[in-house]
Image (cartoon, rainbow, N blue to C red):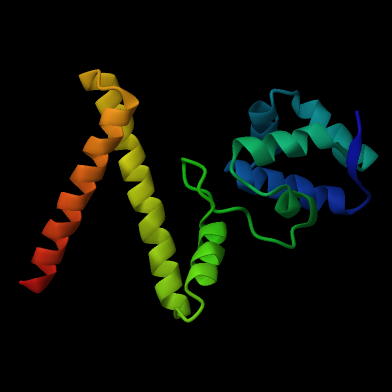
Length: 157
């Protein structure tokens, strides 16, 4: 097994792995990783963490490997559909460079929420109605357009 980290920073790395996994104990982390608790104890004793476990946590818990490894960056803030909010902010700033930061944040959150909603709606339409993906996409588009018009009318009241 290839080592990712050696030395005193191993304890910090293991703590970040637990935080990203949403667990508090070494035993709980071992269950998440499908290994024995003794394996994590050996990591601490040998001051060595195999890279595949760091990759497993990063891939399965929407976290950046950079955060797990270094702790210098924040965990990737991905939505359940894999949209990275921070990347979305960068794209919005690129497309609209004069946009205020708070507007960019609101736009990124709004786009991510709308995307997730549209994606769930699309899946539901395809599964429940038997519509093909092209017709289901047209239905989702029409629904979102009507929803936007209704929202605009509501704001005017």
